[in-house]
Amino acid sequence: MNVSNKELLRKEPAGYSRGDELHPMFFTSLLCLMVCLLLLAGCTRGDTMYKESRVLMDTFCTITLVSDSKEKAREAIEAGFAEIKKLETLLNYFSDSSEISAVNRAAGIAPVKVSSDTIEILEKTALINRLTEGAFDPTLAPVIGLWDFSKNILNHSVPLKNDILEALELVDYSLVTIDKDKSEVYLVEKGMELDLGGIAKGFGADRAIEAVRSRGIKAALVAIAGDIRGYGLSASGDAWNVGIQNPRPDAVTDKPWEDISARLELKDRAISTSGDYQRYFLVDGKRYHHILDPERGFPAESDLVSATVLAPEGYLADSLSTAVFVLGSEKGIALLESQGYDGVLIKKSKEVVLTKGLEGKVTILNHDYYLSD
Ligand code: ADP
Ligand code: MG
Image 1 (cartoon, helix red, strand yellow):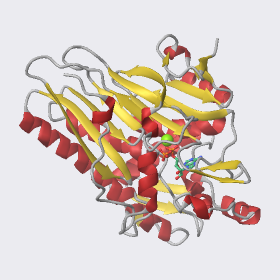
Image 2 (cartoon, rainbow, N blue to C red; image 1 turned 90 degrees about the vertical axis):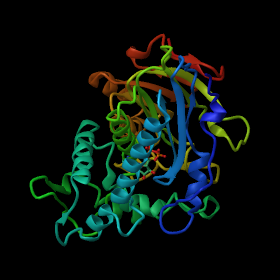
Image 3 (cartoon, helix red, strand yellow; image 1 turned 90 degrees about the horizontal axis):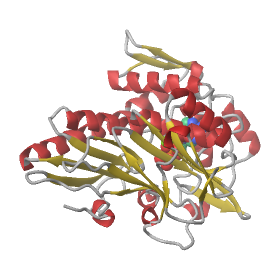
């Protein structure tokens, strides 16, 4: 059985958004799916590919799996989506009832009791914050708020520099106190806030994969927008194939995820892409995008237009793709190789830089781009 790319990403009616009403950002998110899946796997007799998409975490989520039983597949897909939904309820910055909002409201006032899931993602975030020497830092939330990339792209302006400098005073992940024994979190300074938008989708893919795998499913792929994790091979032994979106398409299209610049196989790993083309606005021809440099509070200006990271877990790929985008190609490759992870980094110059582990494994499909020597 072959499933085409188009079929795999078939859209379903929107039923959810951040907040209570359908948010304009939802539409942007749909248009901004950055990684396209090219599913070339075949199935042997008895095995069927099952796939379902829903709107969760303010974006388009797809669970694809291989099973010999329709009933088992249905249960596993439900369980996977339930995990994503649960995390969305806990972690949504834009929902007043989320645990993260409760923690943010109590900044500088009191610790807040949270679930073990929230503790776990905050501890993982602490690790990434240290590993990236602060390039990944969700306490950027007050600065992100000033830029407000969620609002209509036409109404944008650049925030005042003084406001950014003031908000930057509150950016410091070491001021997030996590008490695992009491299951409490405390933001030490009044005005501090957390926004886990750069790691929650990858973490969600991890949890959904665990839920599916624990139901005896032998191969699956979970995609939350461009944060993807897969395991297993199809019954015929083919790997999941993943395409990296062209960060600078020639023409305006309502299906940017179908414009692929490179392709690679995904075997028992997670993959995420961060780029300056997903949410941005232009002022006087200058591009202001949604990945911020925590040192300056302005959009990161590295030599990259997109950073794709492959790692054993989704939370790693998600957060590290953001961090590598901030760090640029040289530091980014060094960081990934030091941890045994992989990356496909597309430079402004259209040169594509790979970690050593990916040499010979990435196919360039759009010849505007070229692999570095
Ligand atoms: P997307 O959410 O579009 O998949 P990313 O995974 O790269 O893209 O996450 C970007 C989001 O993370 C931003 O929208 C913002 O909420 C937050 N963010 C921006 N810059 C940083 C940063 N340096 N560290 C941590 N989070 C960031
Ligand atoms: Mg990311």
